[in-house]
Image (cartoon, rainbow, N blue to C red; front, side, top):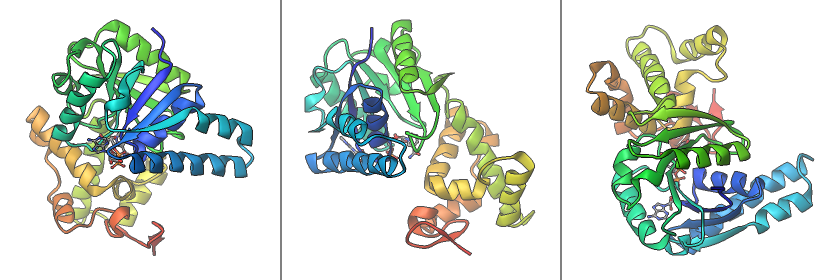
Length: 290
Ligand SMILES: NC(=O)c1ccc[n+]([C@@H]2O[C@H](COP(=O)([O-])OP(=O)(O)OC[C@H]3O[C@@H](n4cnc5c(N)ncnc54)[C@H](O)[C@@H]3O)[C@@H](O)[C@H]2O)c1
C-alpha cells in the first residue's frame, strides 16, 4: 500500500516538522491539534520555515506555496477519516497518548496505519489503546525534522510486515534514512544517548572535570558536534531524566540509574535552554551567556 494522505495530530515542535517534510514530499497533509488555533499556529511555523528557505535562495517561492497548499488544518481526532496514515506527536504522556489513540480509532479509516512519534513509550503498549496492533508502529523522527536525516522505525510485538514496508517506503520518500528497532526501552538511539549524557553528568557531579572540559572532550576527542551537557540543555534536562527513568524501569538494571545531579537540576527547574538555566546559562534568545 502507498501512503499519500497523512494526518498529523499534535502540531508542536515535532508535528509541524513532520507535516512540513510530508507535504514537501508531495503528500496531502492534515495537521491537527487540541484547538484549531494551535493547528494554525503549527502551519504558520511551517510558513516561516519555508520563507527562510526562500530568502536564502534554497527554495522557489512557487514550491513553498505548493507545499503550504497541500497542508490543511483540523481540530482533534475528528478529521482523521480519509487518510492512509495517522502520525501522533502529542505530549509525551502515556495517558494523553492513549486517550488520543482511542479517539482516533473511532474516527480514522479501518485500514489506516497508526504511527506514534513517541521517544520512549512502548509501541506494543500504545497499540492496545487501538483496534489494530498489527497496523500500529513507531515512527521516531528527530528534531529539527526538516534537517535531521534519520527515522527510527519501531516494530511493536504485533506490527505486521505490510505496515513496516509501507512505513519504510514512506520514510524514504521523505528523504530519510531508516534504522529499525525492536520495541525495547529507549529503542536504539535514546538507549545510547541517555547513558552517554548521564555519565557526563556523573563526571561533573564527581568534579572529575568542568562542564566546559567535558563538552570540549566530546567535541574534539570524539568529533561530536555538541558536548553531552550542552546537548542535554538543548534537548531539555527533564526530557533526558525521563529517558533515564524509562531505561531504568524498563530494564530494571542499575546501570541506567539517573545521576542524582540531573534529578536535582530538574527539581530546581534548571531544565536547560528553555528555562534559561541548565548546565549553562542562556539569554532570552537561547544564546549561551559566557
Ligand atoms: N522534542 C524532540 O526533540 C522530540 C524528538 C523525537 C520525538 N519527540 C516526541 O514527539 C512528541 C511530541 O513532542 P514535541 O516536542 O513536538 O512536543 P510539543 O509540546 O512541542 O508539541 C505537542 C503538541 O501536541 C498537542 N497536543 C497535546 N495533547 C493533544 C491532544 N489530546 N490532541 C491533539 N493535540 C494534542 C499540544 O497542543 C502540542 O501542540 C512526543 O511524544 C515526544 O516525545 C520529541
